[in-house]
Image: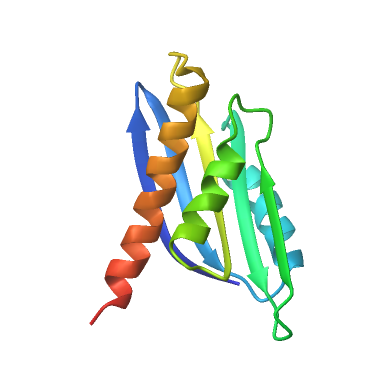
Length: 127
């Protein structure tokens, strides 16, 4: 596994820490989740998504909402899909800032943080 980018995004006092990884197997995704829970101990939620396509073309996918309202895991998965990332995982840890965002606001904030992490990676990758 290799971290490709990491960004911090703020929305109404909540802080979202988004990390994009290149993974070598679906099992690494679960290892990364454990690592993030230790790294961001004060985070209220660790929402995530992974897409892994092996050499035979089989696709393994996973998304986790970690008890957050809305469907942030599914939103993060769509960020991976929309950018053609086939062997990647994205994990976003949210530190609650005291203001509720509602399901739509939560989904938007997770999407924005995920998009920022992917954009940073793609911008670094371009010559």
